[in-house]
Figure 1 (cartoon, rainbow, N blue to C red):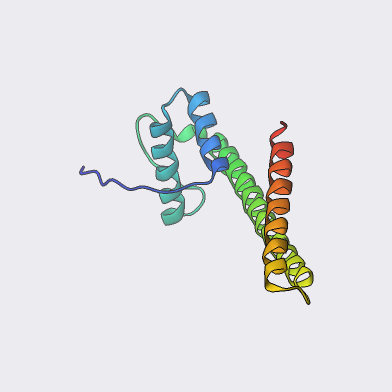
Figure 2 (cartoon, rainbow, N blue to C red):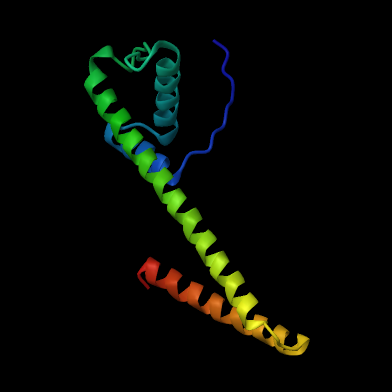
Amino acid sequence: MARVMLTARVTETQAAVLRSYADEAGLSLYQATVRAIELGIAAFVAGRSAEPASPDHPAGHSEEIAALREGIERLTVRAELSDAVTQRTLFAAGAAYAASLAVAGQGASPERLAQIKEEIARDSYAIFERQLAMARGE
């Protein structure tokens, strides 16, 4: 059977699940990824209970597969929620930055306005770096 090379991007969470599964099953990351794709295609075509038939993937593992699917689904939902919170946070930060520029520049000369913008940008960057360091546990 001819093979076709495909690529896909997954979230870091999904990649971690694949790595964990590969370690537990004694597979390489590539083999675990191929198995995940096979299962996904089988589920897509034949419904959620379908499993690919292969000599190295016996049909008796349906409970394990169901547990893995449930775990992946939960992790995917969490990743999506995390992405949404990140987007909202970035929007709020951008809005606060824009508002500070607007308020600080009211009635200021062009030279003073340029200074104010530099100060706000410098302070914003310092706050960002400090928060990033705190998030990393530094």
